[in-house]
Image 1 (tube, rainbow, N blue to C red):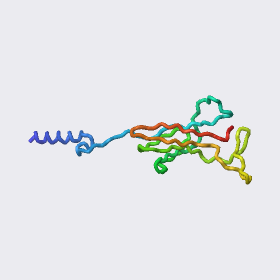
Image 2 (image 1 turned 120 degrees about the vertical axis):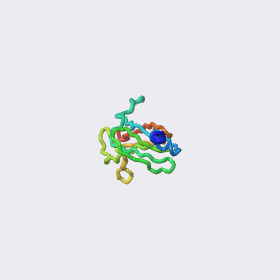
Image 3 (image 1 turned 135 degrees about the vertical axis):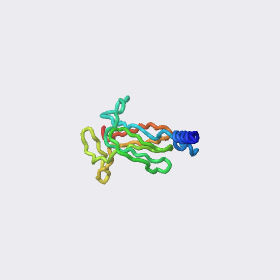
Image 4 (image 1 turned 180 degrees about the horizontal axis):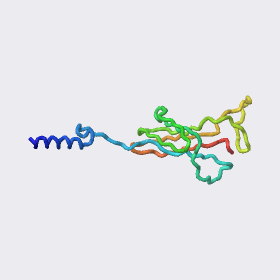
Length: 157
């Protein structure tokens, strides 16, 4: 009788040590996370742009990073950042990643700022000074795709 109880206890212990789902014969695939990660760079030239410009600094203002599916343009994720870095987990596929600057206040001319010219009717053209960039990316399984986006102040000359 003791041998039967010992065998049953060992069988229960062996089943308890198996990974979950192993006794049911199911296979679970555990993939590494995938998505996009990157940095937003400020490519505004302070004054006249040099032929060989210095490396662009990281953009540190308020900015929204938006990810849309390339196939149908549906927005997948949108998040505001302020430190110039972003990281989003995504399924594999094709996406468009955009840096969207906030709507700026009306342009006021200064010695270093040029505002858009008025229209022929005399009304000023309201155009944002900050322009962002959109890049297409391909996300593969188990891999984060690196992206560098650029923001530029087109009103600074």
